[in-house]
Image (cartoon, rainbow, N blue to C red):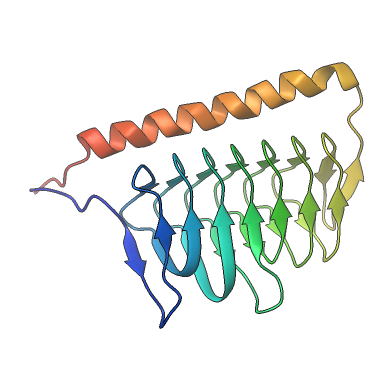
Length: 184
């Protein structure tokens, strides 16, 4: 038995998802409305990307891991940069995440949050509206507090680790596209 190659993808009126042909949307994921997924994006089972009120944009090489919910408002798009790692169970709404950032499992980013390039949001952190996490910094806690990068020499190492995670997720997505099949 053959499994569906792609999760559920729906237009909502004139809001139509724009998905690069090389993108992986796993079965069990939902993408609806004004959602743009660039090349080599992977969206894993149980994710919901709901662009019914506003725009969602996900940049090249980003992985959106299982159970994540991404939404936007009429006033605030949700924009995710390139090679971002979005951990399991994350909630994003009306925020901006710049390239090579890592958003830890079960983190929540609310309206007008900006996470800078290569920054880290710790697992379980809650970023209240208008929180800014500078490039390379970390946000942790509930509500989150921003902690600067302790050692600037670690910045390149962190960026390389985030890029490596994105690369591994894309390789796994390719494996799923080649090998996935339903079992009777």
